Length: 397
Image (spheres, rainbow, N blue to C red):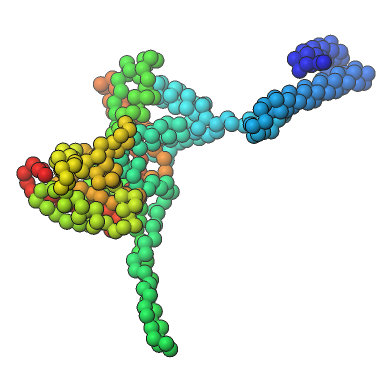
């Protein structure tokens, strides 16, 4: 029985013979005679027939492989076809050419700028970050920034308006034949704008020219951590003026639930039940490490600690059954409890890199700037309740 490999060898031999025939039979004008043209056409047809037969045998072998599997494993894919073409090549700023062009430009002080980078020219004169870089930067932000993992992240191209139901119609009892009463449902809007956040670093020329130095990883790691810290601080404490509006903002932040001179188990209970029941289904705590140091000493009436350490590494600890997240940017005298998915984070566009060569030329260094535009707001203040600890002394249970 003829095998696929044998047919492939025959096709290769036929193709080499056809090429040799074509080169040897050309006339002085560079063309073929009618007889030679007919002979070459037959050779091409033989090669085409061999290709069809190879494809047929490959489909046969693929089907045999599928049918030879145990009956308990059903067919889940179609037989392979030689004509199937995998068009999974990355395009645009996701392409390997763009990524390599960006690295080459960074290492050469943007003296070697390939045409492929024109696909990502920013309006400010820089180059947009390749999509792989942007994705990994998002990973760093999500890992370092608890609010990006807890909040609702939206990618916007302009001002993003969120509609909020201010009032809802209420049902009323009426007597037989009585007049109907109508209530008006009103709506309000919250606007997600875009505030510019940037981070700049300086790299020495020695490091830049050293091929062994992982410039790509260094820049992404440093930029990602710096942006994440600035974002988390703003998402928690931002004033809304030139920056996002934070959860703990006096106006527009979470709802003040209660205040106490020191923290106790009763206060934790009151904070939990100050939050409406629908929000408690997905509620979590956010607090400072110093607050946790005090809470971990709290016990119930049976002497059992309220704190429940996580059983699996990487999982959040629990307090009265609810996940606890910590942030160094959380105010030491406040605890937030609620459904933080109602905190909306709006990313405007994509992040970009720019080079600052002349500014630090005298020091033998080159600067790089990453910038983004982002906003954040709590769209329903009642979804997050705030406990304020007013005592000036260290927290004690």
